[in-house]
Image 1 (cartoon, rainbow over the protein chains, first blue to last red):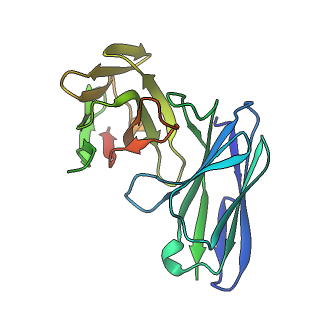
Image 2 (spheres, rainbow over the protein chains, first blue to last red):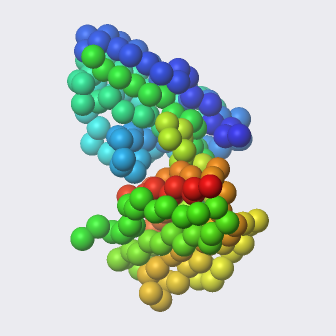
Length: 114
Length: 112
């Protein structure tokens, strides 16, 4: 079983709503990631946190706002999303961000924007 | 040209067959290689991780890396219906952040 836990598993939200996706890991990892995956496509990197600081933002629109409250938790705040943002949002973690570490994914949060 | 090429399939094999899944890549800076299995509507599950040319075996799975040819493979022996999933190859450049570059994924169906 994956040790990266994501909640909620499913989320339906309107375009004017504000919601959050949550991720937790207890492996002592110091790098955490958000990926977005559309149907029949591979995951696409959105954000990387290293030691609780944002280190990579892959030019993600500001309607997606990440937050890393501590080394075990990662949130993705959602506001004013568009229907095309509907996707599987995956959280992942690794030992650190130095490259070459194995990256473990959670089960994902299925987001539908109506 | 994509950095990582992977045949999307679908690939259909009978139970018990040996499955060969492959990826090619164009940039020799890739040094770390992973295979993930993804069941429908689930997150990717890490199967194999390698960082050098050669073979690595884990149960029914063997990962093979040929850096001279820029070619990686995943072999599944005695395939089972439970192996039916999408298999994603992924790789990381040397010295960069842990930023995965994925292949498109190969959908595998193992039939009874």
